[in-house]
Image 1 (cartoon, rainbow, N blue to C red):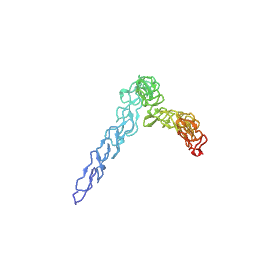
Image 2: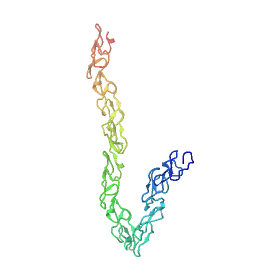
Image 3: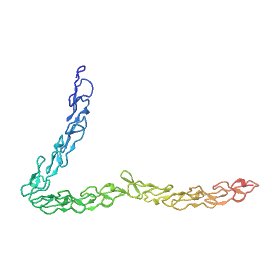
Image 4: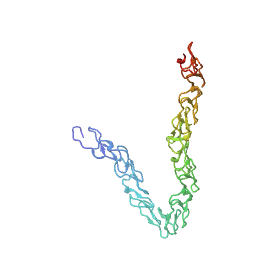
Length: 394
């Protein structure tokens, strides 16, 4: 309305976002809004259309419907039913040709001996003396004999071949089973309708072979089996990629990729569990597959895969493995956890190199561990052999 005058609410299907004397604007095509709407987002898609509020709306496609206004998507018709585009109610869904049922309800096949050519008619009987398979869509499908894909006496009733069977010719003969490890849809009329099951590969209608170990196939048909990702495997006949599990020594620690167990860890069993760390003070090669691959580090001793104990003072162990610690040579000592012979230093009162230590002779001394020479006592004093301190010089 004009400034200073009377103001009238925006009518249905229009809106105005702010104050002022501007006119109300129309909602986008195929949308509507309540009286007094203040924003374009209040314009919701009409029945039969879907989309976000305030935006262009798309008509529901054939076989779908939308019953009310709003931002919801279109719903699919019940199985074996269809509807025109822009349908606004489930009752617009009518049973397809070959099926019967109430509008918007469940649909079932026309019985043997009947047919239905379109959505807006009932199932009609075949001419006298003829029959048809269930779900027939034309009078031309009516014949004296049961047609291919069905079995029964001449004149009917005919029963569609069940899933996993087929029949290629008309008549009273029974349906035949598909080859082993293959299947077919109900009413199949040719051997080629038998396709290999998931987990098996082969030509349609032919023999089907199980996927090898390390392969899988997720769908039915003639496609080849696919290989598992690197460093993983699966049982024979696998149907999903999730059947592929990491090999021992690998772990699925990065999405679908199997990563090798790092040094100092191992993984013994199939599956997607993480690699396990070796016991304390032990290590293993990259890709280890068993606990006993964990061996005690240099400077530690113990059985492979077990607990590791530090080499005590006065001993050493130079390599990883289950060997025991080796004692230092006579008159030499080393810190706990020593990993080399060079760690064995001559004890106080002895001197030498490379672990070959000789006791200090009389009138000399050596006060601490190490490779230093024995020192002579001060002039006019002496000490016993193997002295460990200058105080022994008297």
